Length: 219
View 1 (cartoon, helix red, strand yellow):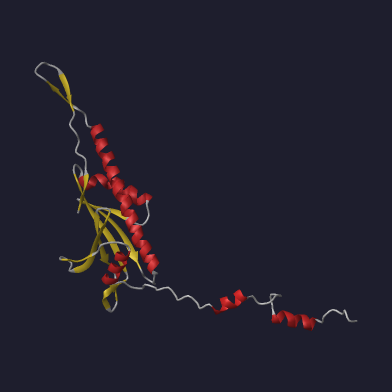
View 2: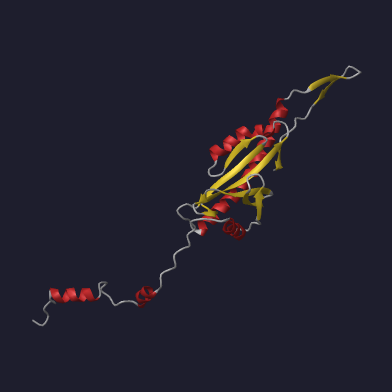
């Protein structure tokens, strides 16, 4: 019969020629010819120079300094009016200039009645309610720090994100501390009983003695 169904062998040959059952599109041909994207750069170590470049690319002004006591070079910058250090961490074997991690450190001096001790509870509350950056009390200073590591390799975008995280944490920290200091001063003023003084005409007069409030000083 002229209308006989095609043989199984003919069907299999047709499928092998075009598995999709339709002509190859031009888009598929173009995609096949598209070259693969170059692999992302991976950072496996840092130097002060490379770290300075990364900070400058993020918009920071960076100054290289040397610790006169420890004889260690480090970087200094600032954000939101608060100065901070960038100190290298673990050195890599066989290369004194390269390191695998570093730490952001901001030191604040708390002046006034109670000093930094007045912020022990607020510092603990910050550490409990927030991740990443941590507050440490070292009277008369309050130390804020964030450790960054590039062990096993990270992308430049990841390193940039860590720098931006530090900036955001500092922007949150300063209002937090000012608010806590205001509440501490108000609580002390409310707890302080007014002194009573008698005048010559035997009139009684209340004299309020303002309680000194701790305040933040730049280290």
